[in-house]
Image: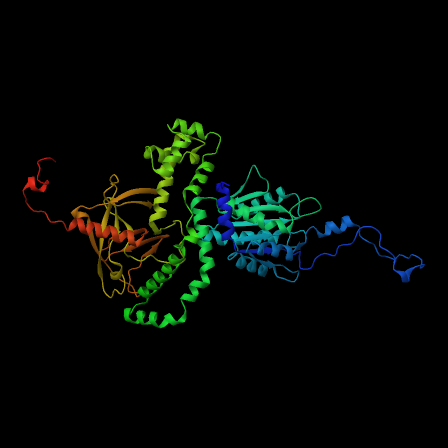
Length: 539
């Protein structure tokens, strides 16, 4: 049977999800005692004895008992259902004697390692303060990490769910979160990369049973992480999780002596850490390169499923016709590289601009530039990955900087990595200029972000494109940036100030340095032109 793109997302999500945490004050471990229906038979020894009711005892009816059990969560069937999906489920049950701050801290710590959070709305009798505090603190920590893909299921007996969603949205907006209430679903709340879904606990014929929660959670997470590259990443991370203990077994203590010897011969801890990082990445690459993990990912079948879903919106055919193509033609261009690829590339962005197809060119430009940065930069100020507090950039191979003078100029540091460490005195660093002229196919192009604007630059190969400036190392024997109003700069010894715009992939930087060095090494001589043209006068 042909898989839909939703099916691919579910498969990747099921492989990825490993941990869940349930936060509820009504968690019970034992199965409830079931009272049989109908009248109970009288035991033989009681035959003939007069019936006598106990004074002052009120026997609750079945409806009252069911209502009291609405808030309870039976942990065994829930944990078993999660384990059937290879997901480990933890439990946090706030007791009356527990301090609220301690409960919040424990919940936040658990959330840092949980793929799925299931939380009750009332963690204290008829009070939602504790649940809101927990969710607010979790989202605050996520925001400090520049966002995190997160699924929260508020599993509650508190009705109506729409009012609970509104209450949480109002609370989060006061905390400066952009909480978006889905107009088409009154149980869904989006806060950046966090998806909060309100679900009714099972009561009589209404709500969801605990046994159904794992399937529901997987489906919700798959909706949240729906994408080609997201599916690829989910499969890759799942493979690494499965292989974690194998990698640890390979890196046993028997290798330590050789590594320490390497560190001793180097005489510098920074390079030793870099070597250890490369060693670790090599093990990871060895795992991910095995066909059983990612062999079928991003193949034609998945790409076709992605295309069909992407262009399944009502006006897709009309938009494609206006762009001069059809679904079949565009699909062939995607899978086979056929047709006019320039116009086909722009048409790919029609779903992202379906509200106003005339702006497809702007959408193509913006998304392509963002992807170019994502594929090139390891670090940026306010980039895709957050920078640690108190962290300072190091001037090294691949650092992109801005020099402001009579005009703004951009440069790429091409100092060999080995010459950016163990610096004991002022040292010159070489830079290659990045010019804002039209991009060229025969040289390297970069998209850099300078404040709020994005600039496309290309590597200048002209003889005057090199710049040298001298910098002073600090106690770490490297050149660290200085922090100034949230920005980073490298002051040179001659009072030039280079503003740090990010670090690109060192391998790409090395290739740029090699290409430029090669062009500068060309030797120009006077020679017979006919022979230079290959024995012909034809140019």
